[in-house]
Structure formats: C-alpha cells, structure tokens
Image 1: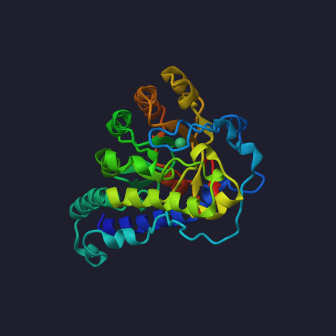
Image 2 (image 1 turned 90 degrees about the vertical axis):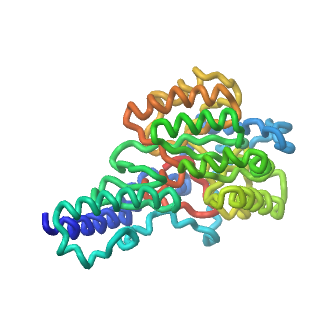
Image 3 (image 1 turned 30 degrees about the vertical axis):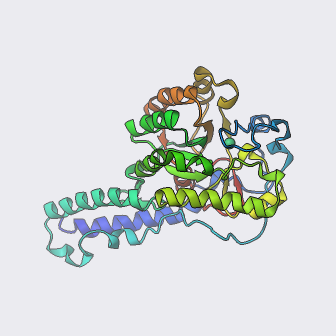
Length: 351
Ligand SMILES: [Zn+2]
C-alpha cells in the first residue's frame, strides 16, 4: 500500500469524473424538457398553503391559483443570470486538503490512512462551510456534502417545508432530521426571518438548505415585474443578512406563475411532484400516508413548516424513510447528485 495516497488521489479524480459525467449518467430525471408530463395529482394540488402571518394578500385568493396543467414550462431562452454552479468543483478537493501530494512517496500505509481520515474529517467540516459544493472521496460512490457522507448509489429524496420560519414546528422538524443525520430544505418567507433569526441560523449551521419563498408570500402572477424582482431579492437579502448564506433556489407561493413571473425570477424555480396537502387537512396520519410507500428516488415532497401535524409527521417519516434506505437531501444536493445543473428562469418538479 505504499502508493495508497496516490491511489486515493486517483480515486478522487475518478470520483470527480463520475460527478462531471453524471449529467449524462443521472439525467433521466430531468423534468425541464418541453412537453414534460406533469403528474396529474399536481394539477389539483398546487395548494398555496396559508400565507402565514405577514403573508400580505396570501390566503385571500386561493381560487385564483394557476394549476400546473395550465402552463407548460416556460423556457425563456435567456441565459441564466445567476446560474448556480451546484455541481462540485471537484478537482480542487484534493488540493484543498492537507499536505500536498508531493510527499506521498514517503508516507507509510499507516500514515496515509491517518491522512485520509484527517482529510475526510476536514472535508466534512469544510462541507458545512461550503454548502453548495459536493466533495468527492476516494470511493466513487461516496461524496461528502453539508457535513455528512452520501452514497450516490442509494435512493435520494428531498423533503421540503414552505412558509416558515415557524420556530415551534421548525425546531421539531430540524431535530427530526438532525437526529438521523439527514438534511432538508426550507423555503422561507423573508419577512418572517428577522424575528426568528435563531431558528434560521440553526438551519444553516446544521447543514439544511435555506431557500427563497418571496419576501411577503406574494402571488407573483398578481404583480408586475418590479415587484416580482424585489420580492425575490429582498428575501434573498434578509436570509443572507441573517445567516451569511444566500439562497440559490426559490419556490413560487402557490406555484402561481405566468410569463412575466418566469422572465423576472432570476433563480431556479423548484416546485414539487409529491404533495402531502398538509396545509389543507393538517392531519399527521394523512401526511405520513401521502409519503410512505409512495416516494421514489428523485422526488421532491411538499410540506409546510407551520403546523404541529407536519412536525409530528416528520418525526414519524424520517426514521422510516432512513430505515428503507432513503437518504434525505436538500433540493440543491438532489439536483447535483442527479446530474441536473439548475438554471435560472426554469421550473423543476423532481430530479
Ligand atoms: Zn407558500
């Protein structure tokens, strides 16, 4: 094993190659192609959820929701202004860590193994700081992201929570994910963030994804271009001011959109393909039933952070999903690990 370290670095390169090639290897789930068929249950379920306190006009015009079926993907054709480079900058992972590769010949196997362990711990720590980057490891099936290891050969699922922060239910949800080393995505309403800063900072510190759900839960199809842009920007600004992390994905309140919305939302737009309708029935058993046995790798599940019933359901489903082999990941992780490079002005339902 005198060349263990060299082999490890070679392994890193192989892993990098896997990630770079994953655009073809895992791209089956891309859902942004024109003419995509949207699961029928979506069309009846683009529920807005309540706007929550400070939600402005939310909740007053629920009958005005645009169903998914009315609009196919709007491919603006414009270059992404803020195309996030979620896929790993993989080749730098080896160089960024520990001693340079120039000394590998002198290292004994034991030393190399110790270095590898140090590298892994270092990568795990670094991945909590650099949350949009996925770090390869010597094992091409294993990557490190947001403070933990992920096996890319096992099922990946994104549970998501809208309309928070809402500290009571939110902390229960975070607890449930943290207890099993899992991650989730919170699509948050910007004007709710300052008074719940500690909760939002905890989400970030624990490796969960902070995402944009507009500043005031505004139905963007009801307002003009300037308001659309300011609603998106102000939400990003307040989350960044609170945590130091700027969101890279957003979700439209109610899923409501039109051409003006698509043209003016300069972020990837994440909707969902599994709807628990928790905002409607607020029933723990129904939420559990909407998920267990019905989800598959690549799915994006819609829930809302506001309800005790949703927190209770989360406490039930997280351990069950983990037991079934699912790895619960953030939306940005799911996209990257499925080989999808998220682009602004585009809508995604699943990966
Ligand atoms: Zn909402």
